[in-house]
Image 1 (cartoon, chains in turn orange, yellow):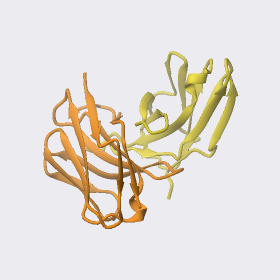
Image 2 (cartoon, rainbow over the protein chains, first blue to last red):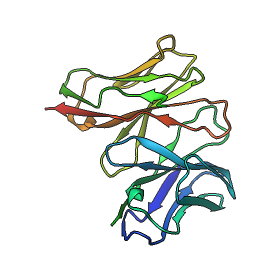
Image 3 (cartoon, chains in turn purple, yellow):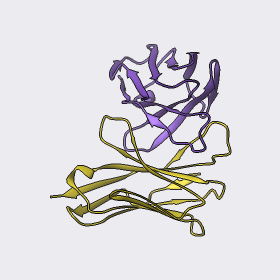
Image 4 (cartoon, each protein chain N blue to C red):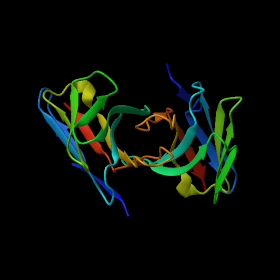
Length: 114
Length: 114
């Protein structure tokens, strides 16, 4: 069966510091991968998606970036965090050859920028 | 422009009764719809989905209804249980796109009282 991991689970960072969140998927190959953010009291906002190694598309302009160095690894980064980057970050995957778009989410990372 | 809307931020139901969560969408190109359940500090869990070729899909206590002409879907939970208390998100996608982007509603907080 497929599993998705995210770490760290929680993170407190000062403004202006760098960020690196990691997501890995097991039990599947060539998945679509996604990064979402849920700000306090709000819905899920798609940040990035990837259909393959090195292929990243951004949905919203921001100071975050994403990379996919391996088939089942997705990394969310920032060079300098802003207060507004605080939130709950979720990684998700879906099957590329599926006739549906069901996405499966990881446990999330709670990021607090102080 | 919010293409998927959950107009009720919260819903309170007695245990054993029916919970009805509603969702409206504006994009007529959406052809696949999903419901997710989310507990605090966890990733969303996939509950049930429906394709636009159907108007009803049932899985145990959960039934999703789709009214394409009204661009409206609903999730029925019968009977409701205290463990169903969570935030429920509806999501929609255009399956024909290559990466399966999901557009989420803002979520509805369901509270089931014993």
